[in-house]
Length: 130
Image (cartoon, rainbow, N blue to C red; front, side):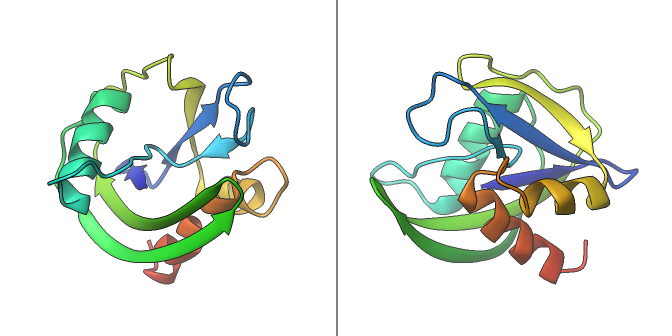
């Protein structure tokens, strides 16, 4: 997962499509990814960030966590990047996206409106004292 952070500190969150089978209509990180064979976590993160948001920016690796919420069973790498570039959301991946203050993301991440992995990734990001 990747968190895009603007120079004013606002964080981009995507809103999962209501048609998603897993956690529909929930808030998610700026971009999420699955690693394909032969890819590193960072390569997969760069690819998906570009595909889902149109952003190409240097990534900072923050950590990993694992979770198991059937049918999901994954290891998630967490990255952040700083960018003020225009966002081009892939609407086949989400129903929209918007920038939020840290306090707003804290409220979203601790609510039932958040995909569970958003909460875990947000905790890793904020432990780094964004």
